[in-house]
Structures are given as C-alpha cells and as structure tokens.
Image (cartoon, rainbow over all chains, first blue to last red; front, side):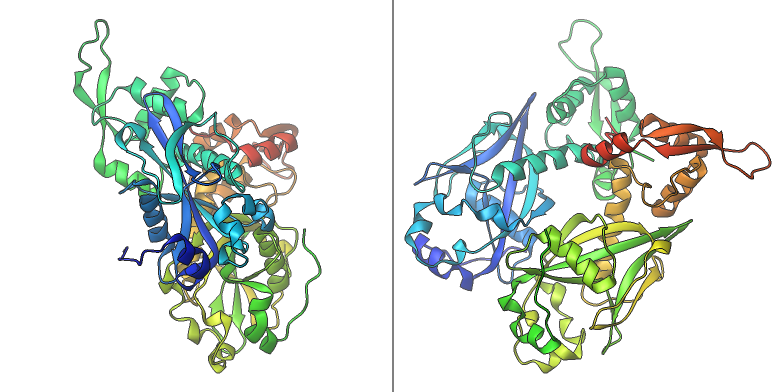
Length: 256
Length: 256
C-alpha cells in the first residue's frame, strides 16, 4: 500500500534522490483516453525545454513497483484510482542517449544519479478522458491529451514506448474485456463496437462483432431498448459484473 | 549484440560484481520444454544449499537487457539460439526476504551488492526438450527438466514467477502461432492439437480446433498423408514460413 513520502525540491531531487529511490530503474505510464470515438494519450511538457514526454518517475527503495506506478501517475497528472497494466520493460542501454536535452536542470549538475542509465518499466491504462482533469506537476508546464496520431517527437525513446503500449492495448482486446469504465452502465452493441473500432483503428463487421461479443458470456441483454430512436431501436446491454471481473482476472480464452 | 565479457570467480562476483553489473536489477528465465505430450520446466540446483531455482543472472552496465537474457540462459544452461519472450517484471520489495538461505556463499559476506533488493525481469521460451542438453554452471550442482506439475519449493518468489510465465505462455496461444520449433516439418492436425492441449492442460474439441487453426491462414495442407496408418490416414500439414513469421510479429488477431 502507498504510504506518506517526503517531498523534494528540484535541487535535492537531482542531487540526493538516489538515497530515496532505486537507481537505474524508472517507470513510464502511457495513459490512453477514450471518449465517443476518439483515442488520445496523456503527455506532459517540461517547463524549461518545452519538450513533451510520458508521465514517469522513480521507485522508493522500499516500495512495490505497482504502488510506485500508481503514485507517479497521481502525483504527475492528478489521476487517481486507475488500474495500470504493466506491459513491457525497456532496457536498451542507448535509450538514454539524448537525455541531456530533456531538462536544463539536469545539464547544470555535473553529477547526478539521473545521468546514469535507466531501465524503464512501462504501464498503460485506458480511461474516459471526459472524466479526468489532468494536472501538471512542478516540473511540467502542461499536462494534456494528444490525438494518438498527432503525437510530437517525445524525449528519449518515449515514442517507441507509446507504440509498444498501443500494440499491447490492442492485443489485450483479444484476451481481456474492455469497456466497463469507458461506457455508461447501459449501452448498445454499436456503442461497444465503437470502443473496439477506435482502439483498433479499423472498421469491424457488425454481425461478426455481435456474435463474438455475445459468445463471451459477459453481457446481459436488457428488456428495454434505446430511447429516442425512431426506427428499429437497438437493444441495451450491460456487463455482468461477476463474469466481467472473472474475465479480467482469468482472460477471455477467445482463441482455442 | 553480445560481446566478450570478463570471467569472475565466486568471491570477485559477490564482492565486486556491482562494478560490472547494474545493481538492483536481475533477469530470470522460465524455459518450458515440450516433447510429445509432456510439458516441463528447466531448473537449476544450488551446489551448497541444494535448493532449486530458475536460471537467472544480471545485466552488464552497457548491455541490452534482451542480450543479457540470452547470455544468462546460455551461460547457465548451455542453451543457445532460443527466442526469449519478456513477460513481466517483478518488483515486490518483499520478494527477496528469504534470500539469505539461497546460498551459503552469500551468508558468509558481511556486505555484498547481492544482499540488496532486486527487481527481476522475467523471460520465457518454449523448446523441444529432446533437442537440448542442459548444462549446470559453476554455482549449480544440477540443471534438469522438471514436470510442470511437480516443481519443488523454489528460492525467493520463483514459484510465483513460474506461475505467471505459464499464464503468459497460455495467453500467448491466443495471440501468436506456436509449434514451429516443437513439431517436425510435416505434421498432422492431431500432432498440432496435442501441442495446444499439453500447454493448456485440457482436452480440446477436434473439429473446433481444426476449424480455428485453418482459419488462421498459416498452414499448408500437403497432398501426401501420414504413412503407416492403416485406416483413414490423416493429412500432413506444414507451416507457411512467411505467414508464420508475420503472425509472430503482428499477432494472429484471433479475436475481433
């Protein structure tokens, strides 16, 4: 569980951070935002260099890496109570090569633990971006949503990390349910299809999609239909909470 | 790419290893062995404590973590040219708690970088165990295959790491092709089904399995049938090399 941690000013952090944090290991978070047919990603902009990056940070010496990911996300963006999925650890020794342009704060220090090589553990999450208010931290000028296809050149290898996260998110659709926190409680099959189409960035066949979704056994079809639709009002569905949670833990076993 | 590295004797390694390796980060490899209906895992036994563990090791300060995984696997087991799949990084600060019983070599040192907390990056691979000759390293008494359901109590959190690797291997069957290095060049559909059944540890429906496999578009049905079968000789198949490799890179898109 997370516990109260000391605050740092920037100078302490650059000079003495290694006394509190594990050296050589960082965490980066790829936060995907979904809302009615749009997919975005949350980025921070450094105050001094104006360069954009994924929200990231470090692990206290006695802290579980999962707790660190949640804490980092909260402290750098204001987002709380988000389930983070670990997807890959990045460990090319060349991934830090461009580091010294990241922030002038780092250039000024002749020695800092932050100048060492870092292996970074990637986490992703997908949230309804209309429901969160991104908040920059003390090092950031901005914290904002970017269209997934218009992301600028990021620091270090963050563009590559984002790509791998997007692949992992898409592959995850094969293995786990999605939609619980992206859709209202009651939704139509076309609403659910739009979630998949947006994440996969392609059109899906309506009938195959419906058949596949129903075969998963995680949906209840309700007696009511969608209101305010003139002709052939579509059925409303909701997730079976128990089965959805079990599928999140055990996987959908879509394949064989 | 891997390069020539200095050798260490045990004492140097325990006292000065941190000058060569990244502190706080290790790698553990879960090597699954498949052969005609049996699934096994490769374990090492410490010389002094006789305790069993996964093959693991550390990352040189200038080394890519993927290269480290391949090097560690080769040096500790004799296995070479194996594609390793990174599956999860384990970072509970309590995962090292039982460490001091692992080897008496460590207990004897009052100070060693190896007594610190380690975050470990897990890799798995699946190989035909009839084709490899496991070879213990200087710290190990034995290096041998264990039945996946009869694994003893391992050091640290290695039993839990093995569980997560097995889940990842099974989930991988949804997303990627398997069988290329586990089957002869030409094989029957029942041969392929046995690979899946062994990994999943359950019986699969013959007709559904065949339908699913053919729908992937990675198999060629040959004109010849299996020899030496009296009645209804089954067709032989082989993998379409190009499509298999593409599916390995891009995934099978089994689901939607």
